[in-house]
Length: 481
Image 1: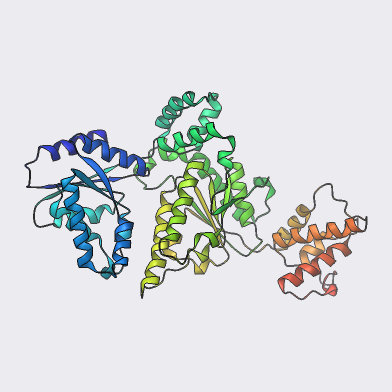
Image 2: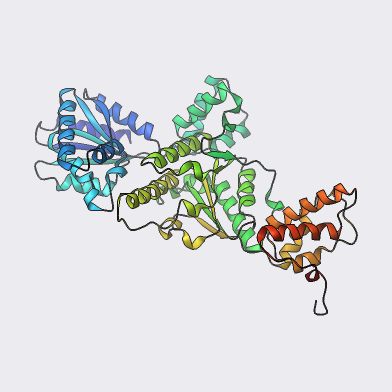
């Protein structure tokens, strides 16, 4: 990569002045690294870099009542100032300039304005094919693009980075702990430094609450969950993928053939109370990672740009903490995208598109759950590596749930008929747990073991919450049973 950058800068510096423009396009997971590489490269020829934020350009376009002529004038003034101050304009957040509706697409116009006057320019994480086409199709003079991609450090490089920075900040982990850091945290060097500095300042840094998420703590492990064999097998595959991805993706070279292969995005779907949240907790616990449930009410904003701001903050913090992100009731944010009829539709689609981009580039684990799979955007569900159904439990599974609902220390009456409850009460695991807790409190209030009467009383209350009709006569064995 360094050789590619040096070659590009050498070519740009020695070319005949006034005959060509040169566009450096950097792509990679570490935006800070890209900015540093860009600044260091152009510093070799005496140029300094300044960011041109696509989001700010889009906002100026909106504030100006979508007056393209006025926007073009402002861009030309900016280009003039950049030339006078010996600056290279670096275009970031290009996605804000691309729109499904060509009437609002600004990328062509912005790039052509830059090409008109700038000998050197750069773009970070832009649409590679489109930027290349714009450069080659520009007619006034040749524009020579160079696409250079940076990667997240592989296992060996991460080990060297950890070993270099750990002692400087007072950490001296044994080999097993170092191996866990290297293999469990797919960090860039900047993220490693951030994590170490925070850890040195305060031990609880990794336990801080995210601004739009709440940590979910539980002691559940893989053997605690009651699921159909097929569903449990899929859950086991998710864990195996997470535990072995550094070997397969990095050591075996799959990252060279599969873009964003380090990301693990999983969708759980099925009725409420079937174990989706518990399964998310199990994944985090088995991998020794924190689980944070996203508060969608704090994510979605009616103000333009605020939702993207919240999402950017969420994913930036999550990457630094290496946590599992859990979006419950995900259909409210990831629903089917609408046709673009007005600015509100375009903004809603932009939110979904931005979220897709951040999830695909997030190097950790993202879990989404939904009760309404049919409401999810199919273009979004194609991004998932696993889509796992959590079906409503049958009688055999419900019996296991009933047996698992009461802790060993709970006194149970000999007449408690769990097979009858499993057969007659069509309930999910969440409902069964609620009933077990309520029945235990009823029994404790009477200083008795948990009896069938306590469980049925608690079941009646749970039925009432669910809007179901409860009849005591239904809970008895008939001639056909």
